[in-house]
Image (cartoon, rainbow, N blue to C red; front, side, top):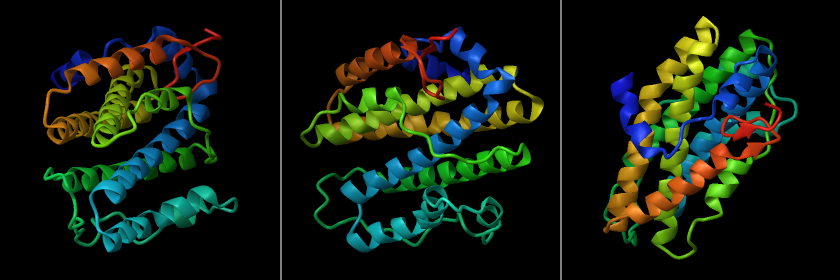
Length: 256
């Protein structure tokens, strides 16, 4: 685990505050933790899909992505959601979709389709895994409004291409790295089932971090160290700042 986490620790500019761990580990906060985590997994898949549709795929392939996401979004956004029916869908529900075709006028030569499709598949799978954990614990799914963390990072994304895409990929790398770090730190404070589950997520989250960062570097075609450092400072500020609301990516809890 230490070997897996070493690049994550070197990348992030601060550790998660102990105060956040203390609050997240409280039994009375378990429902909020799992609900927010579940929402984060879906948002991660949706973000990767957006990047593919906007930057990489032809129209039919973009529509295939939307069809892949449809059952998940129908479950999340319908008030009369049926968790049992959703989880009992066809066993092939999360297999790779049909071959995706890059748009002909795609300017970049970097292949983002393979890494992003794998990420989407894994995030959807994690979403369902968290739902199953919630079902066993009688925790109802709820929609959660976006936390200050993601808004703060995205607010610094540049508005001209390819800088916009590069910055979004760097932001993705920080979100995945922070998720990996928090899973590792929080796992020992949770019950055995959640401990095992969060530890099982570390390898994929670490790979997502590497994929995002590698794609940002390849698409930029130049050194991105300055932008990485910029977002690193911002991410650390957001994580260390006091937060009145508890989220998976919130800062130090004000109530602590």
